[in-house]
Structure formats: C-alpha cells, structure tokens
Image 1 (tube, rainbow, N blue to C red):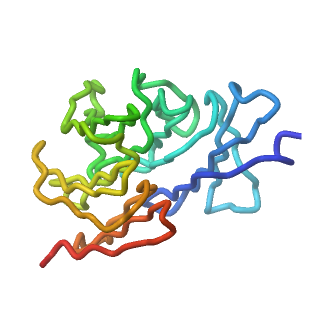
Image 2 (image 1 turned 180 degrees about the vertical axis):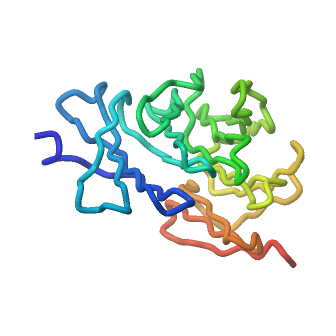
Length: 211
C-alpha cells in the first residue's frame, strides 16, 4: 500500500554513479513515518532499499561528494537530516522554514534559503559541527532557492518576488531582475560559466556570469 500512492518530488545520483535516492510523499497514511528509496545502480533489478526516519515530505536530496551519504530537507522545512545510506539523524533543526538547500562541491558546507514570509535569510552551516551562520538577510521577501557556484566562492539566492542575488562573503555583488514570481530552483553548469533559474512565472532564464 505504501508504494501505490507515492509522490516523488526529489531525486539525486551520487557522484560515483552508484546510488540513486528518491524522496517525497511515500506514506500518506502516516506522513510522520516517511521514508526514502535508495537504488543501487550497479544492480538495478534488486529494487530499492527503504530508509525510514523522515517526517513529512522529503525534499532537496543531495549526496555528499564522497557518496557515503546524503542530506535531505523534511518536516515542512524545519529539519535537515543526514543519512549514511543506512540510518538517518537530524543534523539541523530550524525555527525558520527552510525552503531550499544546497551542498557545496567539497561537502564542507550546507546553504539554506529561509522564508519568513515578509523577510528571509541565507544560512550557512559547516558539516562538522553544523553551526549556523546568517550570511545575508533580505528585508523585502523570503528566500525560496539557493545554489552554490561550483568553486564554492559564491551563492545565488532567489526570493519569493523573483529577484536573484549573487552573494559573496556576505555581500551582494549583483542583483538580477527579470523574473516576476517566486524562484523555485537554481542550477549552475559544471564549468560555472552560467546558471539557470526556474520561476513560478513559467519561465527558465539563463544567466552568463563570465562576462
């Protein structure tokens, strides 16, 4: 019964190509006992491994660079959990709703886009002690998406109004207007020469950052 009405909202593949993790709403009868499906891509026919320990919808699955685990956002955005491919533990508990997370390419940091409604904050946590640091505060709107550049030197954050900001060392180096509604996702290309932003205004925009 658990698989019949499952809704997948996030997937990720580990950097070594061995694992695929899928999350979302997999247990509508008991949402607080949700789970993630982990597929061994070296043996696809074996079916998924069920990893329990998640509460509410699972979003933003991100494997660590060493492929030994993944982070995921759950509990309506008030929790970030780490899974070592076997067990799950909460590593970050937030009083603000985290709408989106990203993991740096070196695996040392997690960025979080916090949405307080009329305001928002960009958070940075180290993955050793998970100490929170507010990188930037937005007094005009909540943040809804965040992405590290491949070199980890900058972050791009999008807010509920559609404005994008490139942030480096806590300073906004560029504001990018064009979208007219909430930013839902941001992704860099591997070379770091441009990124794409997806918005609820039904458009995807490409931004050249190597001008």
